[in-house]
Picture 1 (tube, protein in one colour):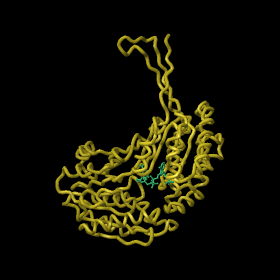
Picture 2: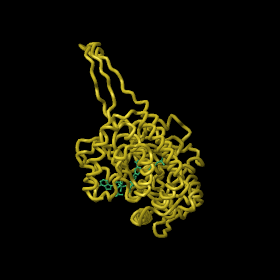
Picture 3: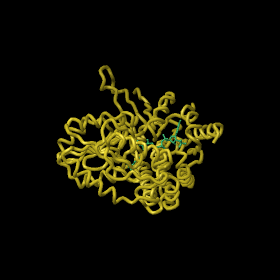
Picture 4: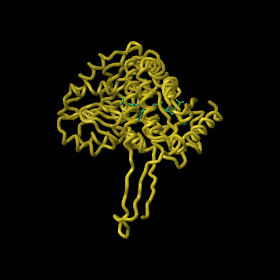
Length: 438
Ligand SMILES: NC(=O)C1=CN([C@@H]2O[C@H](COP(=O)(O)OP(=O)(O)OC[C@H]3O[C@@H](n4cnc5c(N)ncnc54)[C@H](OP(=O)(O)O)[C@@H]3O)[C@@H](O)[C@H]2O)C=CC1
Ligand SMILES: O=C(O)[C@H](O)COP(=O)(O)O
């Protein structure tokens, strides 16, 4: 789309929003439920397009559509439970009980939703549904690779009774229309998921509008001496390699006590070598990466680590965009793979000798999305968790965003604000007071 077309779309959204915010919440909820029904009906069709468009295995792509329908239904229900509050004035010194404030949640206006390629339906709906239930209009810009899936999802929404101008689908490269969108005077809020680089640029350009950002990560799996190593290996492999590591919440480094590192590495190796590698149509776990640059970057991380003395446990094979699952041991802080987010199927193992290094190394990262701790000692896990500079800590399980109603937060360069159904609704509304002076 040209900037003129985008401008028209934003104006239409802004105009339509006024009557939408006056529409009863139960009617907005009915529309969202209908949207969820349509998505479930079309799960095979949309799943196939996701799979072909972003190379996600077909079963996971279909699962993404069904998960999204659940998210939308939960959002519709949650929106019906937002009631505001009543405050009495006599709780502050000098105040009076004849002053009563009704606090209501008002929509912000037009929400700009920008989503990444890797969950083109789920991460779009997790922005669109909360915006709609709270009375906002939405301008939705999908990732260019992911735009067809996004369009199908919006077509399903437009089959409901939603007034058509409330949702505006805007296509075009972020590098061409991104700045125009994020600085447009009729955009009242920006909700973005994508890379840290793009997110930081958006937050610098956006003028006086709330911005919620979910960005990159370098989630560590911290494995303590007493951990159940079979459980840890199972979660680490599924966390690191599913969808070829193209998840913000993928496990992107293992910090393991040196005394158990050999055993853990062997268990991880066996599971990695059992992963299916191949095409999305055949439901392989590891499939070709989104583009050639992404595969080049992962290859650079592997080469850099090997040149600097890392030990290749398995992998380091490539066919075009397809990078075979790669496991590296003896990784140290001088290697790029210790710090960079690969967004691909390479996992570094970093051996830890001093207990305090678990936390210090985890926190040295610029990112702070999630962390996993594997141990039988809940008290110790809790002590470590309180020191980790991340949004969420998982005990004895892989890092992950779901379930979708949990708050999802990125600390440091991993984000700004909080998502998760209720938090997303709150981020798209503001308090408005009507004060009775009786
Ligand atoms: N924390 C989280 O919740 C998640 C974080 N991510 C992170 O996202 C990254 C991968 O996703 P990817 O799609 O490559 O991320 P990008 O940052 O490249 O793109 C994300 C979105 O931003 C758009 N965009 C690009 N440039 C601009 C701009 N100047 N202004 C406005 N919008 C712009 C893109 O459009 P276009 O495609 O047209 O360039 C796309 O829609 C990883 O770093 C990953 O960690 C991913 C999922 C979840
Ligand atoms: O983009 C991502 O990585 C998603 O937010 C991950 O979601 P999940 O951890 O629930 O799969």
